[in-house]
Length: 377
Image (cartoon, rainbow, N blue to C red; front, side, top):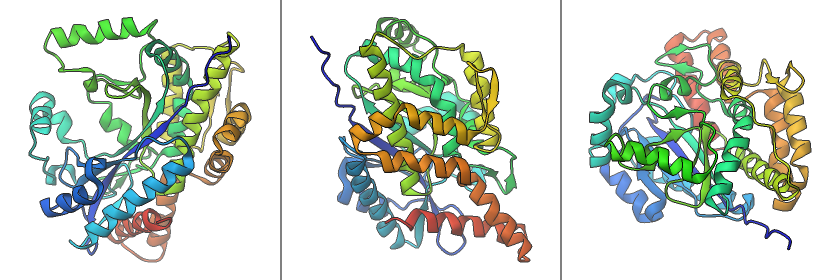
């Protein structure tokens, strides 16, 4: 009997930073702003760990076209309500100049517990991410796909990098966010698991010891969701541009279906040691799309535009199936023309050359991020 085709439903969660429209610095969200957003968006919006952050999540969608419509609505609503308080959202994983010591965390039990449990590590969490959920039937299939899909996480990270600046300085990294996030426990690439049962037993050990309350405290780059029948990619920096977010989601969805097609033919993607994938993860974090990643089969470092071209070839059938060929094709543009980190540095350099001091140049970067957030609304 032919294997039933999974739906591969898709959803995106995004975290935004709120900035003062005049100073470009971070600003806390007034409770009235959160109330207004909740009134308009219900459970699709929530506060985040820091009071200067806000999180949105799309509905469960079948296609990228549906995701676009819902995510545009969410972004537009947050922007509209924030403007009433002199604030505006940006979708970058680190603010170019505001300092983490000057921020306060949200006064909720969940976040108070995090502050107590994780101490100074979590207080530096002035970072935002983008999570992509792909619906995959069967817990064992989700674990099997997690093992295989991990290979492509550095590719997605390289395309997504949006956090080159930290507290007023260029870090030299394209994704400084990961440097901060990796200080938390239970982060990084997922370990290889043989089955969902093995995963559950491992998590239960920590629950029984009182180390964690539940599986939601497992913060790997890719994990089985603790709430939904999905595989949740957490590797990406959040995207200033709506269309770039859709490209990353479409790639994730397409890769998942490609792996399913292999399984139907009793095939699979080759699994490499986490040690090796970690090297590509570092290269993506450090260089973004500029220096290429290692092709372990060829034993060579391959430029990102070539790697992305190969990725698009292997998921071409899947992009056609989902009607997302246009969205995934945009990955070529990012790989060849640069990611958000590259654009932010270009804005900073241009502002400096125009005679602005460091403070003015960094403010220009924030203004650029505001423009990109609103470009497709």
